[in-house]
Length: 378
Image (tube, rainbow, N blue to C red; front, side):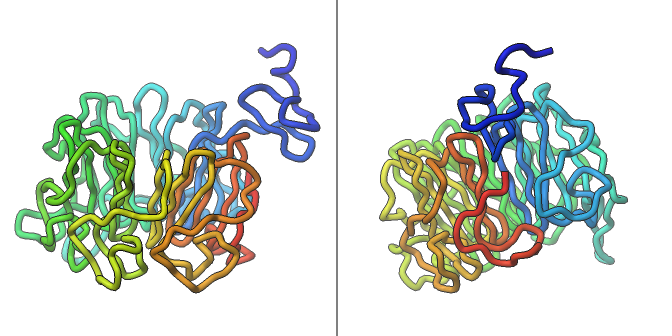
């Protein structure tokens, strides 16, 4: 039931809509609260608890039986979502009651002969064996483990994992990774990291040549401390082969691969580094995002600056092909941003009024392929 302005569906301005809706054209839409991007699709959590996804749907990752879509479409049978995370052909969501759901297609086993995948599952299905979760992460490409942060401040992971001898193994059920006091988690391509209440961060998985673990080691079966990171971490984000943190002191530091200048101007021509570099050129950062070979930060006031690869216009400065370690201001946002997300070669921002704009590579490779300036999708 609704009454008064809460029932309004037509509008001329945002003020014509309910407080958690905005005016799009002449219709009121629910505010977007969170966005996640994979290499094939993206999903939004809306203020009404529903999820909208767009991009490819060849594996049911949009949460319905429709074809691929260039506009957000509703995921079926799910109405109380708090967090969404998408990777490859799989989508995951944390509900208000702490349950974790998935839909699409996901790896369910791994052996020397290859990876076994689930059947296509477009209807959200519960992942069992977890306590109440508050967050969930997965690599945008879909490779690597999925991890959930649960209410007792531990991290539980499933999917691809590192065996004690450094080989690839597989966790078929959510497994406590052996950490306590976890305040945040992130997921990269074959590795994960966790911020700790005692300060600093630990990572595990495959580091290979990227030094993504922050130790210089090629792999870690169990979590290891990022050696040169000190102080309290307030934000933790990972791209494919690198990780950035925002410390409580207010600075942003990144380590791992620097192939596309993801580690900022102070890293110079280094191919990779286990030692975090401070990202100069940022002021009063309030949020941070990493994905693919890029990072972006939201500054106080809602401006966004991005750095790293720009092959598909991910820096949002209207051009393509010229990557940079210098944070570059995104041009053409329709208003101040409150959240930003990256995945593959795509970037999306939620604006203060609840709308969403994206730029970079078209999500799902749908036409047009490249959009180097922000374009409204919701």
